[in-house]
Image (cartoon, rainbow, N blue to C red; front, side):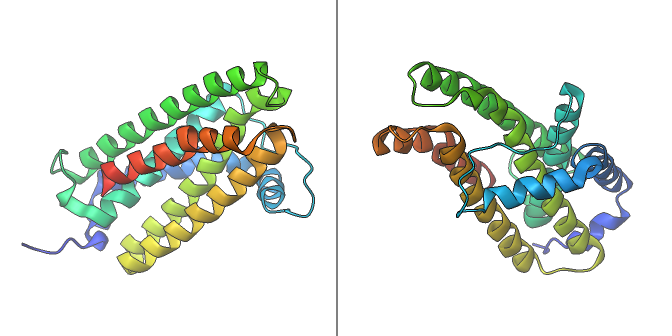
Length: 221
């Protein structure tokens, strides 16, 4: 059995085209207001100042759609560079495999957004959450777009600069964990009121944060 080499993807015109599409989507979304994105990231890790404000680049519905497409394509390419032609259940063609992975990621993001909107609305009506709950969808899409940008950069380095796959995996995991920590901190300080019990917040994390992560791990492992 031959070992998959990500650098071979540089000769696949369709995969390169998908990466270009992802880059264009990134440029039209978070790239168009990068200072605001940087301000948002800093607010996620400003643990000494719990301002409780959601800061994110303002995007239209079309802009949010482009951000999701960017994230899905970037993640699809990155996962394929890790697993190669051994991705179970997908076509042998690299571009089709990337598209198949991207579609699954889009469905996952849409499902999680629907869960956020519905569960946050219920919790808000029970007075455990502030009135900003409807803004979380835009903030969440911005966060995953940042992760998508990192994954796209790592994919480019794997394909064109021969970055080691293990090193790329570790870097991607570190960035994902840091973004998750910042997201959870911002989630608690921006949404949940002080009278919220630890049990309510723990159940919320299990349902909307921990369970989806295990679902993604089970699918891509």
